[in-house]
Image 1: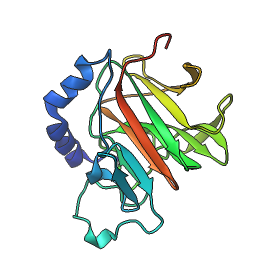
Image 2: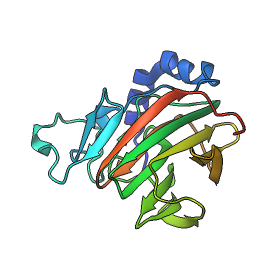
Image 3: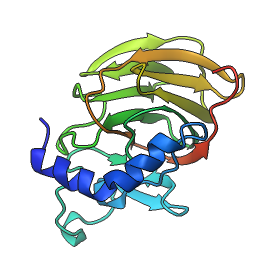
Image 4: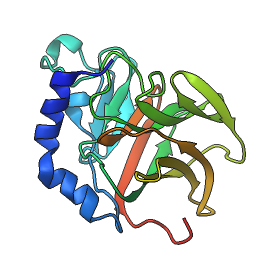
Length: 207
C-alpha cells in the first residue's frame, strides 16, 4: 500500500533539483548515497553512506528517531536520489553476503513491506547460491550467473526495463520488464554480510 503523505515528503526533499540531476546526467548515470532515514534498524551504513551491512542485533529501535520513511519490518534501505527518465547504470560489490536483493522501488512503497514482495518494486534476489527475479512475491529463476563479487544494474526508465549485468563480461544476464508509474529509487535488502554501491558510472559500451 502506498503512502500518499510520504510521496509529497519524498518529492519535496528530492525535488526538482535532484530529480533534474538524474535526468540531465543520463550519460554518466545517477550518483546516489543510501538514505539512512529509510534503513531498517538491523542495517548500518558505512563508507560515506555508500555501503550497508547487516547486524543480527542491529540498532535498538527505541533509540531511533520516529520516522515514517524507515522500513519497520524488513531489512531494506533505499537510495537518496530518484529517477524519472533516462538510462542509468550502477554496480554493487558483494562482501560476505549470501542472501540479498537489489533493484528499484517506488519512492513511496510501504515501509511495512519488503522489496520484491509488493508490486511497486522490481528486484533481483540471490539466496541459496541461486539468482531469481522477484515481483509481487513471485520468483523466476535466472541462469548463467554464479556467486557474485560485483554485479551491475542497468535501469532504462522509458523502456520500462531493469537488467542484471555480469560486470566481468559486461553483458546483460537477465532483463526484468517493469511498470514504472512515477519516481523510482535504487533499493537494497540483505540478511547477512555487506553491500557496497558504486554510482555515477557511465553506461558501459554495448549495453
